Image (cartoon, rainbow, N blue to C red; front, side, top):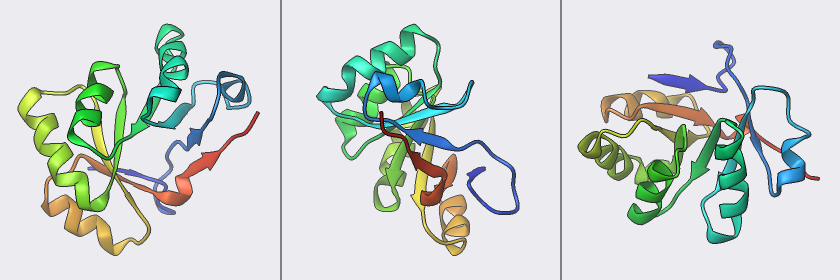
Length: 130
């Protein structure tokens, strides 16, 4: 299981950006994070064209499928949607990893038993503005 943002485990931070210029304010080789929406498609295409690792936050089945097709490395979901997203990833053999956004350590065990690829603590999502 991937665990991002836990105090015991060194891991990368994800930088939540809202435009292409904000990407320039992130450390080299960092992962950018975006909520999936049509308004962010330009940023997603820019990241993909420039080999920038990116994660997409999703809330629907269609968005999970889009995120995979767009080349996201990670697909982030709320805990209550993680099992659905993971089932899709397993069924369609996604390259992307499903990460459930969590607040508390106690949530790790529950999600591990559900077979979710990983978790990310909400505080590991760092907002970057341009």
